[in-house]
Amino acid sequence: MIKLLDEYKKLSATTLGINDRNLNYIDKNSINLSNSKIRIKKILNKNNIPTPKTITLIKNLKELEDFDFNLLPNSFVIKPNKGLGGEGIIIIYGRKKKRKETEEDAWIAPNKQILTKTDLKIHLLNIINGYYSINKKQDIVIFEERIINSQFLKESLFIKEGLPDIRVIIFKNFPIMAELRIPTIESKGKSNLHSGGIGVGIDIALGITTNAIMKDSYIETHPDTEERLSGITIPQWNKILNLSIQSSMAIKSKFSGIDIALDKDKGPLVMEINARPGLAIQIANKSGLKERLEAVSKLKIKNPESAIIVSKEIFGGEIEEEIEEITGKIILGRFTKIKINDDSEIYKAKIDTGAYVTSISQDIAEKLGFKYLIEQFDKFGIQITNNIGAIYDTRDNILKENPGLNLTVVKSANGMTIRPVINLSIHFVEEEISVETKATITSRSHMKHELIIGRRDLKNFLVDVTRNT
Image (cartoon, rainbow, N blue to C red; front, side, top):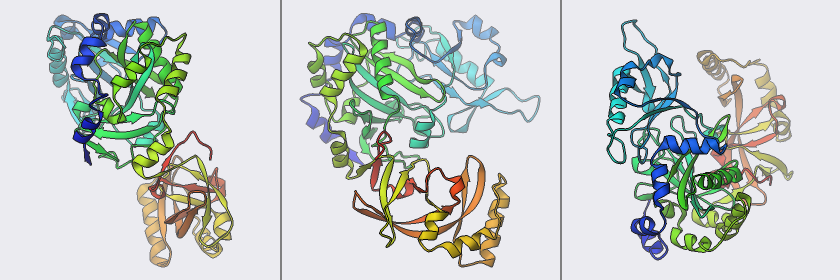
């Protein structure tokens, strides 16, 4: 990990500081609005900008006393209306099953923490009493639907708990800087950096992540999952930028940070608008906000689409060259050309970051000289099952009788099965890189592509899913 002090020094001439931000770029109207999540959401909904659904509100102690917790859905989010920096937010994943009728109702929070009805009431009381409020005055409790992580982010980051979001800094309705904010175990499911979350810079032009920071250091991989953080292509990037601009226009804000999350079914949803967004985003992007603010200060736009085009032209770099320089890794598209072992034939391989191991079809395996292995394996007549114990017992019994075989259990959406494993040398033709690996052999009928390169063999690469080659 690289300390950030040197980076602060490099960016000092172009960095936007807190005093400069507060004195020259923030307007009072935006602050008053953004201090109330309820008011912001009303304005956004009025302008047909998608937001998470509000389940209910608790406005005072009397309403808390009369509140029926049984009316809540199994999962939800609790927020203080005037909270700041993620303080007071609790994510609830589900109800805890009672072992006894006399047990108190309880819910499951991040890190499998159990919160009883009493625990929740105390937290709600703290919110109402203004414990998390910006001005420490009486506040309102918001119960909001829990956003379900998009499949893309699950597969890219492999985060089991917490909700990543994208913050876009808007100035005069131009998107000038963005970052992906990612929760960690330490942050208890919240993506805020000061809570222990991760900030990853995003190239405005292509929506691809670049540098990642956590606390006072640059990092390359997620501390909980060890997944690489740079080179992730954010889906629906233009829509995210468009919603950010629309949100800024709706509240008539000059300078703001728009927080957007990607829901599995609903797509991008505007979570919050912050009139005083944190400034660590500059370090994650290795670029100062001040020069970007000045670049668009005298520009005017006709519509969000025009603003996006202009911002991409001004702030989008040669992303592939930049990322390759930062990480020392080559960028691959969705497909690449490879050679296997000493075979001169060139194959088209699918790059699949959702798969851990590399797989090849039986047809290709036979060409490479593994026909006998396939015939031997087919005699076992292995079926797909959801019985974990049975599938591992089957594998162990086969290996006892056939010690020369190498077999592995493979999980998929259909269940679990067993596949033979072979040693391969894969040569990426255009990239001129070779990788020694272990690959599984599977029936062609179970594969959309005859060759799949899994993420275990992609450590020398970054993947841009928007590229077909």
